Length: 507
Ligand SMILES: NC(=O)C1=CN([C@@H]2O[C@H](COP(=O)(O)OP(=O)(O)OC[C@H]3O[C@@H](n4cnc5c(N)ncnc54)[C@H](OP(=O)(O)O)[C@@H]3O)[C@@H](O)[C@H]2O)[C@@H](O)CC1
Ligand SMILES: [K+]
Image 1 (cartoon, protein in one colour):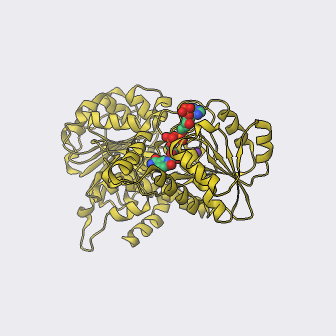
Image 2 (tube, rainbow, N blue to C red; image 1 turned 90 degrees about the horizontal axis):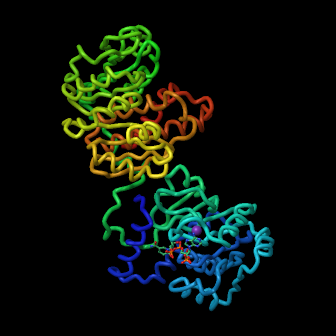
Image 3 (cartoon, helix red, strand yellow; image 1 turned 90 degrees about the vertical axis):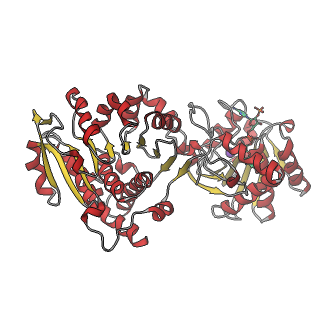
């Protein structure tokens, strides 16, 4: 499922009209009817439904919805919330069809009586504004939206909650808080941004017959279980431990032994063939009892922290994950060259490793294997010398520009994790919940990503599937044996067994 900007949506619309010959009026009919079919699951004929209709094509969809629901026997009142001259083009054609059907249209004349009338509604369908919104809502629509948000009714938005822009960069202003949004054709970027996604409520996408195959692809898509099942690695019956990758995780210290232990355990639980842990000498006795399946490489240390990356033959490994439980010492930054010179496979860089890579970004494109950075927004802000607020506003474009400029994969972690290839292709993975907002979750993810990267033919698939396995495990555990309060990173590792059983039994 592709994720689009407003511009990309309008382009699809134009190809349908100009190349295929589907008229705009027909597209609007398709949109309204597809929405009615979807919304029928949410409403009943004994409910009072109010459709609020604005001045653009979103309002045009509203006329189709009001007409269709009335002919299907629902109790519908249609409210036009803008003046008559604002209803033009295809929307005007559908207004005529609504009126010609003999149905009554309310006009919002004063806000007080409008508010009083809407108090009676059980369901409000918001067709005030769609993807054509520009800037903060102007009066009286700002007051209309404020009234709507205070009503007790269940609110269903058409295409997008009115006032929410489709694209990145939204500032804070009045917008509809929907309980459910019925999105037309493809989810818009704002459905995945932290500041705007909560306004959508639950959402679903309906298809209206646009010729997406005739369009340039947006190279931005939602990754879900169906895609994961199609691309999940298969373990061949006659494979051996060498077939599934020999990885090394580098990190940990006397002061923070747990993080590297969790990464290692997660990698082992995710099917890696062989795993070595390269860590400070003093932390080995602390973690070894928990990791019987791993081998150890002892690194020189200073006050319990890893001092350098010398004395290990990094070329002996198929892949590396570095950064969990190390610290930001300049001597280690210089030591990153050891890996760029000698390592011999994909390199996953997490946590404080991100701090060290900032000085070494110029090496990434020349490294003959994939370099994968897994920052959260704070770490990505640090990497790009931007504020966290900017990263949250423009995560799609910032990660795409950064990945292409530096020849790296970026996994920007968050409620919607954005995975970007060095060519700028993007996937968004939305599983997981607030139970993951705890120390250690990222360490577990790094282990899963390393293991799947070494078992998959596509790094991009491995990263998307790894994020999905991580998030789905949290979702299942908080529905069964845990809550979002008590779920620990170590519980996630134990929970991987059931997730992998589900995925591997389906492939
Ligand atoms: N393939 C598709 O995509 C299809 C799309 N379809 C539907 O069309 C929708 C897009 O329609 P659209 O382009 O007409 O824009 P839309 O959101 O209705 O808004 C335009 C109106 O908003 C107003 N306005 C703007 N900013 C404002 C503000 N800040 N404050 C106040 N008013 C503001 C602006 O007024 P103006 O600025 O011109 O005075 C104008 O009246 C799309 O979301 C989907 O629902 C389907 O019907 C068929 C296929
Ligand atoms: K809307």
